[in-house]
Length: 148
Image: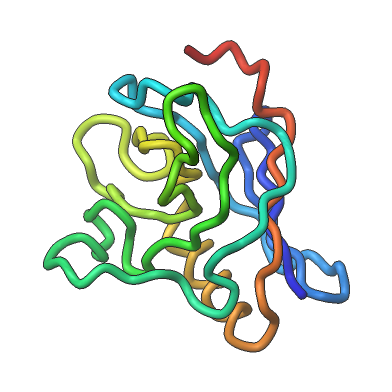
């Protein structure tokens, strides 16, 4: 099974196939919007992927577009821990989107807890998932980055 590894210090996400070969490394960020009250960053740990064979798609016009909330490929969701305010922070995952936003476009654009990456990364992740199920997303070096 394949896996993703997000490095919060390097602002990169790396895709590994089931043979532990690097498929690619791309820019990625975990900039969480201030409106999210129960999470400042994703804690360092390995998360189990919910959408192992294909990203979750939304059936809302404009959402799954390059400039939409999640990018053209949708979101690869994973299970997140309980927080002081919620039993679990649902809907957290890896996605692209906001490619041409006027302020902090692409991976730098804030999310509601997710890791935002590039369209190129999501296309490669989506392609690999079809033949090599995505098992985990590991977050490392994300806790002490001088963030909020």
